[in-house]
Each structure stands twice: as structure tokens, then as C-alpha cells.
Length: 488
Image 1: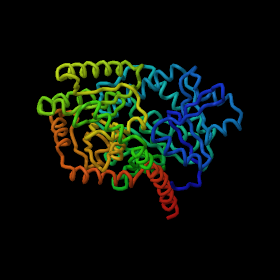
Image 2 (image 1 turned 90 degrees about the horizontal axis):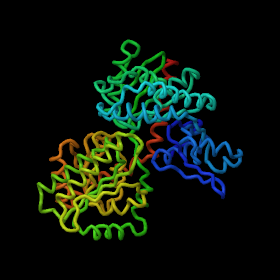
Image 3 (image 1 turned 135 degrees about the horizontal axis):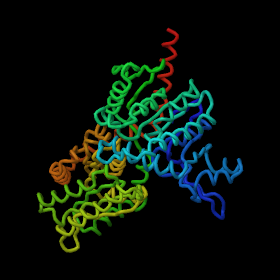
Image 4 (image 1 turned 90 degrees about the vertical axis):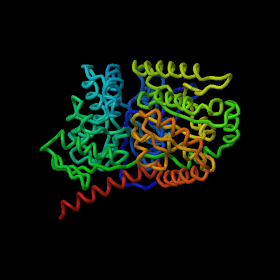
């Protein structure tokens, strides 16, 4: 990890830690996900801040209620840096988070316009007011030389709101989901306001070059004569400033996953899994139960595989781990019902004796619990209909023992632009997915090792910590070029 002289202020919707008041004091647990692990060391090193939502109203683990009950020394002993929670009303939570962020921006940025709910009259005002509260917290607690790093689609207005009060603030924004092309983006009634919001930043980051190109096109077409977009340098001239736009693909903690894959009993547990399923071949899918992940289409492709290659009945089973998410949102409840009905139909038609074509686990797995499933799988089927990056693909590659295993990857993921040795599929083309499964389980070991070895080398060569370092370095480089331009 590169050192940095300035203080880092991270701004994200999600809190980095879950905290609870117990009889023994305060219990603090780092939230799962690469973002917290990657940013924690740099925020700690710089004596920085983390601004985030306080959590569910009335919850015993609500950050503000716990933090407000601690003395300064107690808070310092619990957290490695200052955590500043933002309080939102129930109405804002319902219409900012569940509403505008996840019923408008999330489906639209994933190209699923028909899933968008545009007519909630409280959605945009709640999104605006929530962003305003995040910005006010940053404005109140940030200093002139801080590097303020805002994260994701929940907070697209925050950069310009901060700049409106602090004209010389140093601001970056990173988008963790896909950014759509203009023909999709133009559906947004508030498309101009969101672009203006992001352009409050000095540096804007996306996972892959195609998202950069989409953003530049949207800026150009939304703001017309107000901006000058230079596609060669990926810069935008706007309101007397130059904004740099970069591709900076997030990754995983490679050392952590290598260590987990070598953990005690992982290999033995993987053998026990295949013995329990009583099969020669095992495939795996690991996803949140989200409609962007293409789970229903995946199940239908597996059904087609067994119809097309019936000799593999009873010899291969597919294990799908579906982690519950947004269970209070009607569209997600509907998806769960559709997944359950599709699964039941396929298993009831194809099952023979104790063998099931698809084994489905609807619950959360820790990384430690996932390791035996990764290790046991002959292939991993990662087929979202659209995905910003998809880190499960990278996690699987680092868990394949002796580089044996095949990654089947949707060409609609950001990861597909990096992980070119995977077997690529169109997630809407069921036959291509069925054929890819056959290709995977018949692929010679030498080809598996060649493909997986190249994937592993690339993942180990650019980890989530390199992602943080690259973003910070790009920020400093952009500042330096701006200073030189002023002096010349």
C-alpha cells in the first residue's frame, strides 16, 4: 500500500463496521466486502474519516446511537479512525435507498429499464435530501487538504454539493456498478442533475474503459455546449475546471484468498462435498439473489445442458448459492418466487433417485464456508445479465487447486474485459451456456492450467490494494498536470 500525506475522507452509503452495545461493552465487526478491507489501512494511516449512513432507525446496532453513547477515548479504542454516521428519516430511507437508488438507478445502470419505477414522486426529493445530508457532514468535518473519496451510485450528487461550499475541495468519485450508454441513460428524468453532481469531482473512476466511454458520451450529450470532452485524454473541461475520467478495475485481496484456499480441511471438505452429492462433476454459482445476476436463465441453461447431453445425468450436479438481499423490496420477492418455481420444475422433471441436477442454498455463506465449494467445483458459472465487475469470478480463480477448473463468464460483466482466458458466454443465449458447460467438463487439464494460470497471475498482480493505490496516484498525477498547465 502506498503512503499518502493527505487525510483520506471516505464517503459511502454503507457503514464500514457493525457495532452493538453488549453487557461486556461495544462489539465491533468489520462489514464484509473488499471496499472496507481495501480502504481501512489508508484511512487509518492518514488519521482519516469515514462518512456513512447510520443504519436502520431504532436498531440497537445503529451507529449514531452507539457512538453517541461513547466517550472519545472509548470511541478511539473501538474504531481505527473516526466514523461519522449520517441520520436519515424513515421516509428518506424508503425513497432514497429503496426508492431512487435501487428502483431507478440500479436497474437502469444494469440496462433493465423495464424494472425501473420512475413515477414515485418522493424518490428524487428523498435522494436529493439524503445526498445533501452526506455532503453537509463532509463539509462540516473536512479540511482544506483532505482527499474526499465518494463512492457509488447512491451519492452521485455529493461531489457538486461539497464543491458548492468548498470550491477548492479535492474530490474523487468511483462508480462500483456499470455506467450505461447514452441510449439507456437518457431514460432518466434527472439525468442532467446527476451528471452535474458527479462533475463536482476532480477525478471520476469506473471499472473498465467501456464505462469511461459511456460516461464521456453522456456528459457530452447532456451538457452540450457547457463542456469540452477530450476523448484522447479522457478529460472534461467544465466550469473552469478539468475533470479526469479513468478506468480503474477493482479486485480482491489475493493474499487473503490464497491463504483461505490453503486452510485446514478445505481440500478434505471439498472431497466430502462431491461424495455427498455422489457425482463426478460439480458446477457452482455464487450470487446475491438479484435480478441482474441471471439466475433463472442460468437454471434454464443447465436444464438444456442435460437435455442436450443426457449422458451426464447423475454424473454432474450444479450447486447454486443464492444470498438473500433486499428482501423487503417487492421485485426481489417476486424474483425469489420465480427462482423457486424454475428450480422446482427442473428438478422434478430431471431428478433420478437421490440425484438432483441443481442443488440450491438460499442463505449467506462466509468466505471460509465458500472455500470447499470453490475447491470442489470443476467449473464456476458466472452469468449476470449485466455486472459492474463481479469479484466472485476472481475469488474462484484463486481457489482452484493446481489451477484445475474452468471459469465460464458472462460477456456482460466488467470482469470479461480483464479475464479474457475465461470461457465467454452471452447470458441470454441458453444454448451457448449449455455448450460452455460441456466444453468445461471435457476440457483437457493442460488447457485448464493454461487458462487458469494466466487468470491467477493477473489477479495476483493487481489486487484490491493496488486498486486503491492506482486511484490515489491518478488523483495526484491529475493535480500535478493541472498545476503545470496553470504555470505554463
